[in-house]
Amino acid sequence: TRPEHILTPQVISWFQTNALRDDNDTKNPRASVLLYESFEGLPPCLFIVAELDPLRDDSYGK
Image (tube, rainbow, N blue to C red; front, side, top):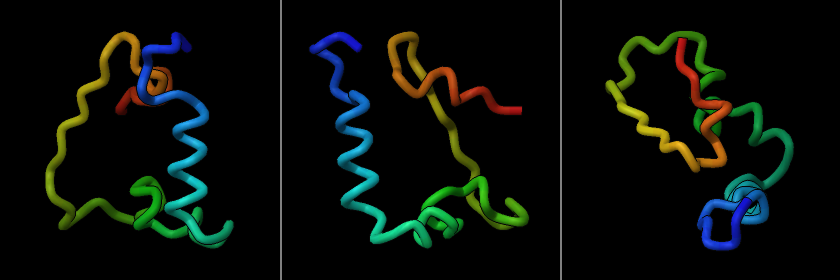
């Protein structure tokens, strides 16, 4: 990760630490949409991932 990148592993960790109270929160679908049993009724969304985005490797949608 280059220093000018805003979303560094340290920043991602900071967000996780400050957004989730404990490990139980990581199992909540509101924290990770992938945990929903069904996507029915959820609004459509568009994800745009750029070449230098540190999340790019994890962003392939099937």
